[in-house]
Image (cartoon, rainbow, N blue to C red; front, side):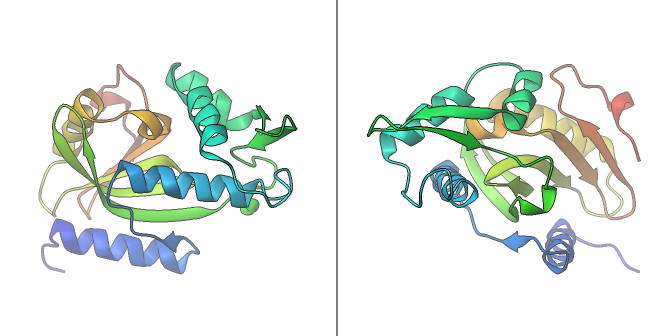
Length: 195
């Protein structure tokens, strides 16, 4: 097996995830990420919403609820329900993640999302669950040390991760030969990565 480029690794990973039931979607930027999240929220909460789409004002309330807090707080918000007062004064409970019936969640994969932060960054592969980016995968071509992918994710955290990307729970780094993972943590160290 020869040296695989980062692009080849990315394509092969996405093909494998699609074979496992993930939906491949194309999200180019933060606006498209938000639109997909809104759509997935509406589908996942179809019954609670009585098949009525969220208005922009209602979606904004949800986004405000999700903003702020530590990664621990965000993980808790994922498991909790949000009490939403709809524009017609009806109260509904929005669920972000179904931990009891995990197969009722919608698994999607996308790649090369470009986010403008302090710098413009493009993320290799992102796994979304119900529209929220929960797993970020950074790939390097064969022969490149995993520490480079780890350092790149640290740069993303400093320069461009924000809003929905603050919900990432897990990072995966791979060079096609070795793969490691680690939990999202502001004070992460390469020593906290696991094969």
